[in-house]
Length: 222
Image (tube, rainbow, N blue to C red; front, side, top):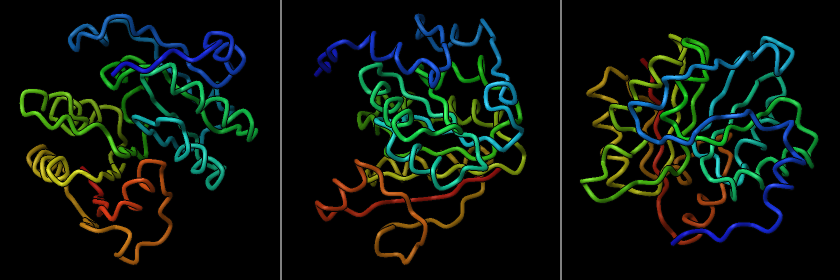
């Protein structure tokens, strides 16, 4: 089901353009995504050399904006492909007056064309689409083709945090990370009953938890 275009979308995006990093994402073909490289100068846009946290699939920005508030010494890049959704995230950041967050309207395939190698210290995958049908497995954000992208842009000591409510997707992710050189730790099959502290609850997470569904979480390092 296609999302209805928000009223005055272009005007709203323009109003919060200071929070948007311009991306050319007309061609969604994986092999063509990084032919044009326009690397982001993080020091220039944030005016500091703080470490970089990347969230892929930020939705309406609740996690990224909360993280930005809690970690003013970290620079956040939040990625979301849908203009209808990312505009809400930008407006939230603008309303809160956040200075350490920027948004990119693109898909993960484009990241190597914008994010320099060895620059990301932390990567968050929060409730990514599980693409349950096997024939769409290559679209899962923990598929090898995406893990290869992460390897390029991550610092050697960087960490990936994943949360999902989908058991089968989580099992796929555990296997994919393990087969592609990542070491897993702090694996939880029921995050909210694990005693874990410091968790930022996303909109999807609250919805699934309220339904009594377990939340799965892991940490992956190279």
